[in-house]
Image (cartoon, rainbow, N blue to C red):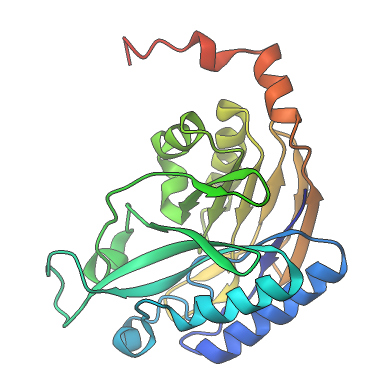
Length: 265
């Protein structure tokens, strides 16, 4: 499956500009044969805390509806996250609503599944509640299961391992991973692929916002842990044709999942 990572500069709080820009870059990826397209974390707004109530979305999620139209038109898969204003949850935040960082996966025009980030980081904790479920997203049409995690969760190997144990075929990490942590990003992204013997799409943003600057560095890594495509600091699209058989072959050659000792750890 030919996959693309859209490493874009997210314009702070400029929702429509970001959506239009993301879809323009996605069109370019489609023209190059991409079937699976990954967008960065909260790609439509960035961490727009001052205007969170204005930019957050609740079901049926207008931004996701727009992406569904694109996905249906091009018969493709789209993955990313938005800021969600939810009706449920305990009101622990100093706002009128409960907010989540909502990951999504769209397949051929339909929302296949969502994932609420379970590990908010630093300032996020003042605005976002934590999700309480880790479960891969099943894409029926493509016979594919996506293990989606968000940014800071790259530092928690338990998340990727649970997704792998629950049947993920591809691990996808969407992020706004800032300077000066480029070395951590690269090392952890490769480690998650190696230790789970799974292809890994690690899609970061570029540019800057009022709080941070971003090094980009998006990567597409195969199930052996080899980096097959890598971005630098600028906006770009990276692509890689993922061999969906490779994961199973590697797990047969080095059967770490069979040799695990869950009775001890």
